[in-house]
Image 1 (cartoon, rainbow, N blue to C red):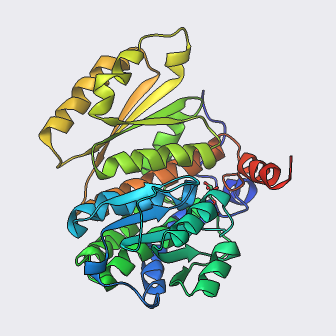
Image 2: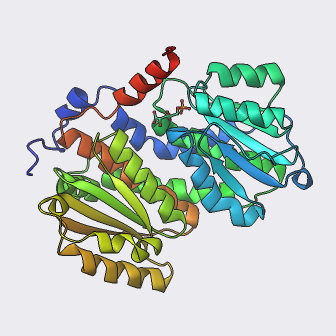
Image 3: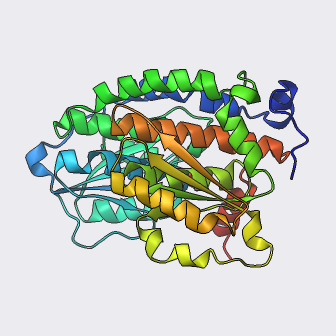
Length: 358
Ligand code: PA5
């Protein structure tokens, strides 16, 4: 389907994006630095030898930062980092489990249930939130808390819900090189904002071009093992929430052992699908080869295949830059579809119905 809206027409941002999602995306590099500052005084923290594992609790836009932290820092801290999206936690979590309870609103019932369980089991807790019941609990019970700015969509607050976790780990002494890598990543992202931002015309703007390719199609995003697997999931969620589009994701090499077979031709349906592969250009040669072969194997039955080569000097830079690109593409796709990227009415309605006794 040919888009009728031009992404180079500055008026459409005012008309279709009154909540300023594009500005939030363009501001991501600065938000990263601001987020680092927020976590500089979190309160009393445990010593490294008191921590056996880390658990990060959250849902949706408040949980993906946990995946980012796990994939970037688990090896360095030499402890398991588990991300929990749900009401319950393992019964063996105890005093040696450091829990980060993350909820942008502070009112998400699954996260509140899980943090209550963590507290009952004696875990050490740090809260990240803009307010709500979680902040009230933290104040009441003397948990260290990072208060993030209010008035954003949780998914647009990714920097604030992610970076403070790494900074707290640095303050504890579990992590040493994150801040340095973050600064380099911020510089690199600033340059990408000039290339992918709304001012850059579509002819020279890869993010706008990719959004145009995706218009009228269902994106299926494949990330390679490691940081780009998390980026692929973020892209999928951003297509869902910003673009209001169905979208799916999976990870290589695992999809080579099942999903690749499923891309048999299915009437016109598979022709409406665009596969996007996120691949680390300097990564494992075996993964690069897999992407080449897989894209050849499936392309004939799909509407298109795009391969995004990710570059960067560190895993932090590669992951953050690929997240930034996906965020831009998802907002542009929303606008091409004539959708306001900000509201998530179905999520709001669901929460509303759940809070009303049935
Ligand atoms: O993007 C969203 O709005 C959702 O995925 C929310 O993040 C999710 O529902 C959890 O809410 P909160 O982030 O307020 O804990």
